[in-house]
Length: 311
Image (cartoon, rainbow, N blue to C red):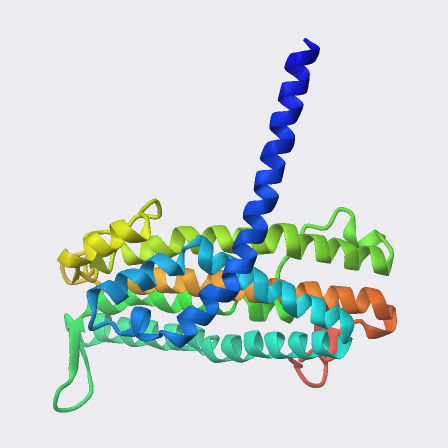
């Protein structure tokens, strides 16, 4: 029994050692991979070459790409701990990016409402089966196409305005513990949530969404289990096959755009997780007086306090 236990312990320690070696090997290789990708952009950005497309597909969801991002994040964090002004600069930059993207695409909600009004008028008043925009080479589609396209506006708001809403504090929260704890305890909870919930969730969504997207853009269809060599072999028969199938014969046929938005959502959530982690750390370090420091929050103007007090 003791021999069996010692063997099991030895195997566990050996596996742990192999894991640590694998981790550091990938971190070291990330410097080479990043430098090689930057110095040889045609190998993955020249899409006139079918092999370049497959390299782009592979590396977008690869371990190599993960460790390049992980290493850059680690370096930025270490440098930021040494010079905290860098962390505040990163927070302002990332939150500014989320605010800019969100404020722009929030207008999709207004476009969705206006287009719905136009659809109702065309259907009920003019009894027309088609809707045409433009002069000369006009954009003409069946009314059902525009009706189904409304889902795209909704997807734009949901995916590209999620981090903007997070920065503004607009998400609904189910709070059982957070409100009653001390300020620095709140910051610890925020850091833990950013590091162990937001980031892993964003990585998982990206991994599934990335290959889900490309499986509806090209054939032969790539798989997350394919190695680079296998994808390069598939590239010999590669051709574009963009998904244009709608739910109805004349309905909206740009559903591949939703898959692009899914990847965009995952990337923006990951970026916002970094901003939340750094902001929470800096507020934890500097105390309650630094809460919401540099926060670019929207204002409703006069009467804002009364409005917020009713919600």
